[in-house]
Image (cartoon, rainbow, N blue to C red; front, side, top):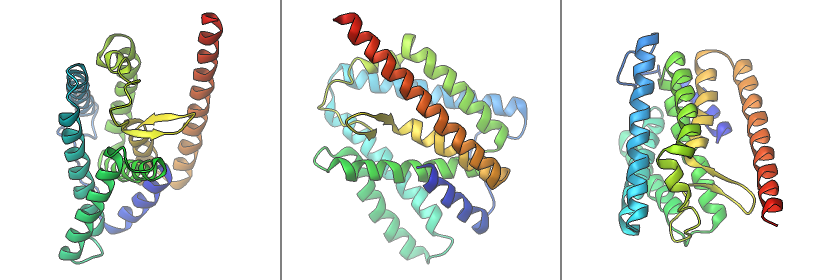
Length: 238
C-alpha cells in the first residue's frame, strides 16, 4: 500500500498542485492542532457507531455503511487520479467500475481472501496518497501523532476496547488485510501510506525512503512484541 501510494504521489506531483482538504489552515501550529482534533472527533464518532452496530448485531446496516463509504471514497479518489490524463466521460466510467469492484471485494465474504486483500491494499494506497499529498506536513505529523496516542488509550478505555470484543464474530467482514498470521486494519494501512506520501510530496524521495524503512522496522517490532505477548498469555493459561 505504501508503494502504491508513493507511485500515485509521484504522479500527482507532476500532474497538479496540492489542495488543502483539512477544515483549518494546516500550515500553522494552531490550525494543525485543530485539524488533529477534527480527525479525532471523526474517529470517536466512527468508533462508537461501529460499536453500536456490533452490539445490536445490525449486519445489514454495517455492510450498507461500509459499502457506501468504500464506494464513495474509491469513486471520488479514482476520478481525482484519472481526470488529469483521461477525458471526463472515460474517467467517470472507469472510476465507477473501479469503485464497484473495490468496495464489493472488501465487503463481500464470498470473494477470495487474496482478492479482498489486494483490494484493501489498492484502496489504502489510494486514500493514503490523496491525504498525504493534500494535507500540509505539520498537520500530517500532528494528526498522526494524536491518532496514535488515541489508539493506545482507546484500546483500553475507549470504543476500540468494545470493538475488539466482537472481533471473533466471523459473520462480520474484516475491513483490512488479513492472513493466517497477520491482520492489519485498513486505517493503519492508510496512515502508513499517508505518512510516506506526505514526506515524498513535501520533502524528498530520500527522506521518504528513510520514512518507509522506519515504518517497516516499527511494524516488525510491533508484530514481534505481539507474538511474544500471545505466547506469554498462552503459557500463563496452561
